[in-house]
Length: 120
Image 1 (spheres, rainbow, N blue to C red):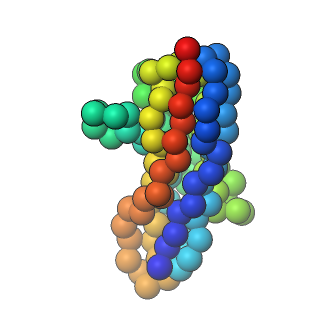
Image 2: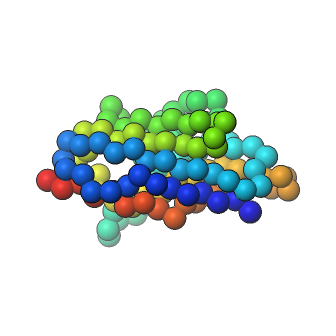
Image 3: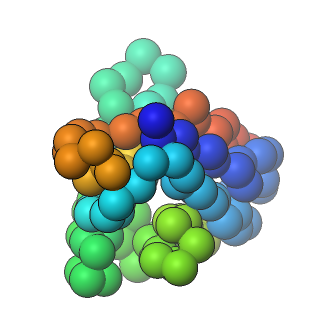
């Protein structure tokens, strides 16, 4: 069993900042790549940012220069710093982790999502 628990969402004014956290726990042998996705009402889920176990990052064009993904391997936690927020960033943000378990299976796991709302 692997669990992802997100925190840090909320309501913020345009131009403001938030920091999302996602802690992974359970039968983890290895945490591989981790990432953040988001889904706005009426839209498909989209990739926001990813980070490999070696620290290589990728970002959606829409968030480059404003969002920063990072991870603390000792804490099995991935973070997403959201700066210069815009109303179009409003969405439910989901954490994703590629996990190799102690049972030697490997698959993606998802968090429950955290709401980010940006007011204009």
